[in-house]
Structure formats: C-alpha cells, structure tokens
Image 1: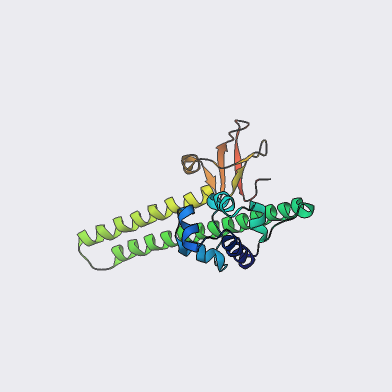
Image 2: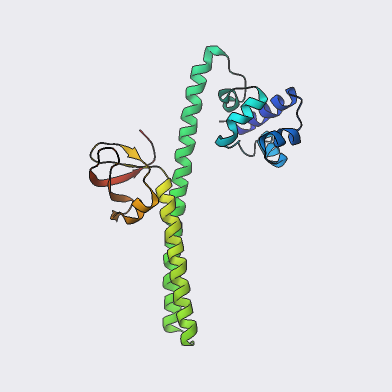
Length: 203
C-alpha cells in the first residue's frame, strides 16, 4: 500500500467534507497531529479507527486502502490485493516482533551472567553483591516475560494432529514444555496434545 497516496486521498476527502484537521480529529477523538501524519504519508490510520474514519469521509475501507475511489469494475480485484497486502504486512511485523523477542532474551541472559560474574569476582560488600545478583535476576525474569509475550501474540501455533492454527493464552504458552518455539500443548479444536510449531500465517 502506498502511504503517501493514501495520505493525499485522506486530505482530499477531508477537504471535500469541509473539515479541518482539527475538526476531523475531534470527530475521531484523536489529535490533529495524527491526522497530519496520515496526510503526509508518515503513518496509516489504525485498523480500530478505519471504519469510523471512512464513515466520516464518506468512503469505503477499500477506497481508503487504495488511495482512491474504486470503481465497481475492479472493486473485487482491488479488495483482494489490499487484503493480501495487509496479510503480508502483518506477517512482516510479526517476524520483526519475533526478532525482538530473540534480542530481548539474549540481552537479558547476558546482563544476568555479567552481573553474577561481577558479583562473584569483584571485591565488594556482601550487601552490594546480593543486590547485584537480585537485580540481575529481576531483569532476566522481566526480559523472559516480555520475550514470551511477544512469542505468544506473534503468529499462530499449528496443531500437529489436525492442523488447526490458533493463538493460545499466555499462561498456556508459559507452562508448556518447549524446544525453541515448538511447544507441547493441547489443541483447542481436536483436544489432542502435540508438539506445535510457531507459524506466521493463518492458512
């Protein structure tokens, strides 16, 4: 999707409805700075606000994502292209999220070992030594929590038995035995336990 084209289209539609950026922002209960970012192509409207924005501007979501009013002749084709593009962008965002998860996990582990090493081999009082070790474990646990949360929400887990793909709860993921990103969990559809791999697409 062309963000600049979409931004210009939003600005054009806003002017046609005789709304200033401030007035449109008030209708959507957001800041005029957000409107400015859309219209300059720096960002896209969040999916949670797209329907309301389109209603105010008198356009369809398909029009918005195309950056122009779509004719009935190519409506279905453009809709399909937009859906495929959105799926592609979602998968790319989730890949980045999983990369951040790895970075957080490695960083938390390195910090823990560094603080334990310092506490073990550097001359200091016992109180400071204990404080360093406790601080290292707190950072490590916090890192593990956020890394696991990212793994849970990015993509899906695929059941080995029935192929069903789903997003489990945080507790289910945290409690499941695992090898890397493959976890032994019960499928909510077939109710069977299996080693379920992390995948990015729903199909």
